[in-house]
Image (cartoon, rainbow, N blue to C red; front, side, top):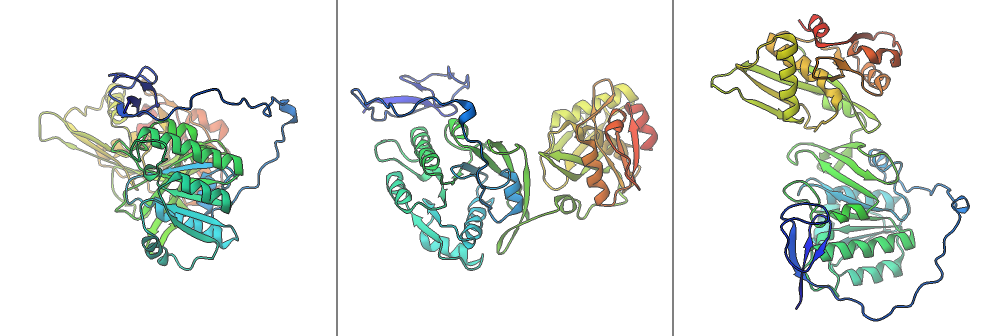
Length: 448
């Protein structure tokens, strides 16, 4: 049987193995698979598909379908769009199947006909998991199958209001000789599901396994084909779960929804800021609260820093929840601009709650936490901070300052340290003291 090579990242096909993919320039991504069957001969050309004038296209908003979780609806941009193809990825045991089973329960309870297809569990196993969540309506139907051809026949004959595929790596097409989960199978199976979803306006949820690097297994073209890509984050041994939209054609990207894992499944957390700040120490140095934007939602998180004299010749620096190199950069700025010698000190930085933050507005809170621990001076528990720090020690403006301040006020904070250039866009709020700073030299006056 003829063999071909596929790139796992972009799906580029080659007759021989290549060290670097000509399509996406990734190295070591080619895998060998049997060549799929090709259609020979001339096919009948379609003549019914013609161009139309843009202004004549109907742009009426489709009525979205609620998942029963306001947190998940907001991440999706207001609910599930008919005909949408939604990919959900995450680590094993994080709660992907549990969440989708609860979504099926909520949607079937509202009168929708739902088809849940599992290629990994038997019907009895799904029933045992469903018993923890309560009773399901008769609109919820199960199917244990891995053949895509069989699935297609059932979906087209049943015409459900939503379909769940768990998972795409277990599905196979009979006309492709490679094993399930291979590049060819995942790509062609997703393409078939996309045609079913778009042609019949049936929303399809797809569960995707992830690799050890944390990305969905299979070709990267899988994420390009679907309409929405959601990732589950968080430690599977902890109570909380965070679902984040990485791609969304029908809403904002980088939106997050927070859930808490309990015995009866996942419960949504409507006030994640309060949830993230639970157990925060009020009289410890090296702790400060930052207000960050996750999509369109402001979230308050605690930044912790521990700066201590090193016992070795080389100081140790670690960062959990933020970029390690960014922490080193900010400490270098402190040494250069404020003359604080940290070459003999270990530094440990942690974002409490397990969030992974990359927003530049985190910089000012990181600097305050490091200074607080270095000077062993406690920052006022009712103080929040946000702002970007440049290499010259300047504090630069960040977006949506007013939303951040309003969120802090709701949780009882009374003082906010922010960039001076953000003051004009921040309205005065009664009971909230706004402190605008231009550079780190001014910051020292407010942190010891």
